[in-house]
Image (cartoon, rainbow, N blue to C red):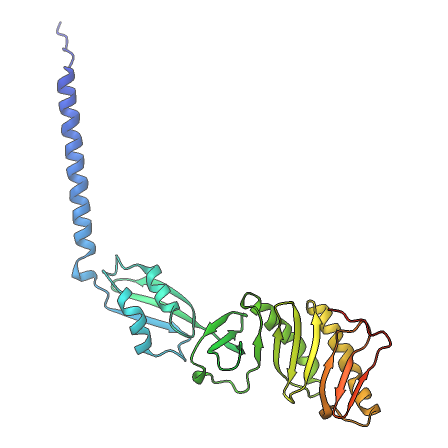
Length: 263
């Protein structure tokens, strides 16, 4: 009978070392080959396919913002960096960037839809249909007679929502809203296209619209009682427990008996 001798420990270590070295060599070769393959000119980015809303954005503007981010190849380009570059372009709200095999990038853009001017007159800021404030060239606005909204930037969506609730109430009496502002203390002020200024007080949509409905439901009768029409309206203060203070050309009156204000 023959019996096998145990493999010496040093031989085992030598075999293990050889196997590890071989594995390391293979991994290094794969890594080097992979890097070489990814950097190969065959995978160079050949172009961009841009889809979506681009009515305010020229190809030259896009190239200036995005060109520096098109580094590397189709396989190595940083899609997130490219997306952020597109979203830094004025009027671009959102960009979705994908690889389009074998050598192109596909980009879908969504532009801001201007709903109103934002801030003081002369500022280059707008608020979009989602209530988000953004900067843009005001000369590129296509809509006529946008309203002007103002307030804390972090509450821009709330200001836009309030404007949308109040607008039909005032337009029903042919009193279009030109400006709506929310103060830092939470008070709402409306300026009509006629120049009349209305203090609406504080609160959310239910409270403010309730005061507005009370005012709009009776202001024409109150004006007529004083021999005036609505075009004589110069201002009103709705921050009263009941009723409101009304200022007409040549007339000032309070419709409520209780003058206690609601702040």
